[in-house]
Image (cartoon, rainbow, N blue to C red; front, side, top):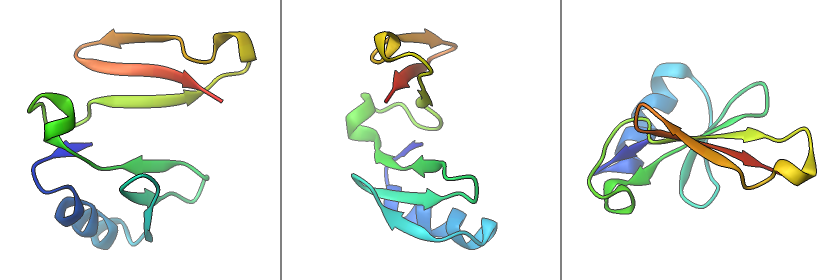
Length: 79
């Protein structure tokens, strides 16, 4: 999630969802299923805010790194 004040936004969502705020290359919410919601500065996204990317765990190592953009959101396969 990109925002001009990512730490403040992450803290707020941490309170709202009652989940811990962690640090994983920046402020993140640690979800019960092991997922992370990462908050980044909108400087990293050319000023775009909101949901800008989703990383999905690849089931096949040959697919790692593949990505596509749907409705302005980048979907990327990761290890």
